[in-house]
Image (cartoon, rainbow, N blue to C red; front, side, top):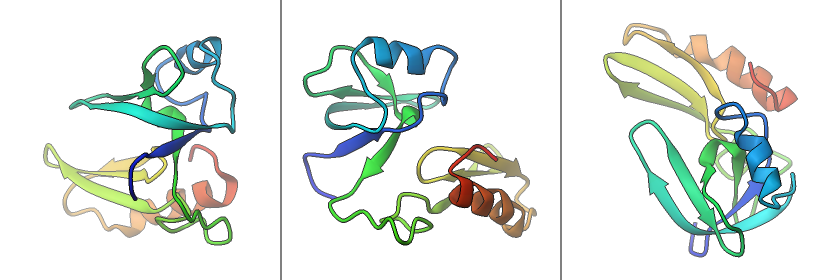
Length: 128
């Protein structure tokens, strides 16, 4: 990735209630690509400010846009839907690269437990 970074407003139903509607009220159109002006990364929430748009928006409303997105192979980093597993607060936290939560488990949980919901998400582009 290189700057400037771009994102696609793809998930108006994600995030806290009303965030997608508020984004639309600020002029964002689903499927459109926007350039990130600034990024605020927090411990429990992260947000973008976009060039040419007033307001601050939850990052889970967006998909990453790479210079060479790979629509043929969505289950990759370049496709925007790679499985991400993080260790936090004595638990495993699984999400898709696009931000969709896929579950949690203990450190002894097999990673296979996260594969089925991730695969279903990649195929349907929906919440598991």
